[in-house]
Length: 406
Image (cartoon, rainbow, N blue to C red; front, side, top):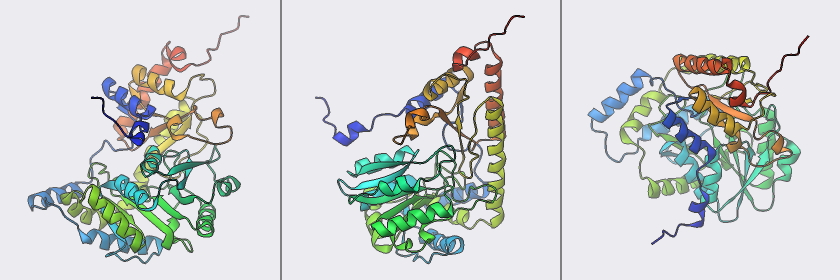
């Protein structure tokens, strides 16, 4: 008998990103598509995890010490007074923290505002909760917040606003002025904010991450989600958390328990070591990623990509295809995988709505730079080799220059 699937499950079809990721795996391509490091996690963290396993921290577990350390960090970094006993939920990565947060606050028919381009997981969680994603287009090339457009997106059914800063895919860090607009709107419209702050420690230059919860009136209406994954190069450990007012945290915790019960016990124990890392660790992390960012920007610029916006944070460069390449982002990425053996992500999967969106939604490609120097250099060489080959014009849809005769 044919399975009778739910309407929501049928709507969650594979995205172009997923399909091209499978193609990259089959082709053995260098992976600049997915945002996970290909270099080792810090040795002292690995040692802590191994020690926890050997000490038999292998059963269901809640490590309260994580919440205690997170509360100290919230006070130090953002001036937030939070109760470690009631205001935190340890989850299976930021992804589960975000999903449980959405399930805790969104009812059928509620509208949730998303800044576009947007990471694809958010809309799926909203759909599973029965909510309605409403996309607010950021203005290229610097992906600035259009205040008028944002305010006009609110209706009587708006329940929440989602904010990811530093932002995936663009690398934008929302400015204090933009955060103030978002905060004032949430307060005046009585909305909840759900933030994704996984790149909070990866910012460049003078940029500094500011949590929306730290603005006036926002702590009591903000759910912060984050994880160890990006900061400590352990995306497979799946240790994340939500920080929220106690009544919301209580609801998130109940949903978390019903879905997964417990985050991986030995990695929770190792998280204590990670969260005690000295300031030098975070400074080195930023410096290393800034160097990798600049390496990828130089590589892409030399190939003719248009870098209108230098990432202020995160681990991605969102680059526009060269003007003389008459090819879509999906076709470019497919050809790049098959011909050069390098994988990236087509930008169209992040776009959904906005004025004149057709003029740019198929022109952007996301490249991840959370890779080793060896990987980045190898990818650069493969792309240069292809560009130098006779087949580059057909592969990339370049406008071929025909020499004039004298």
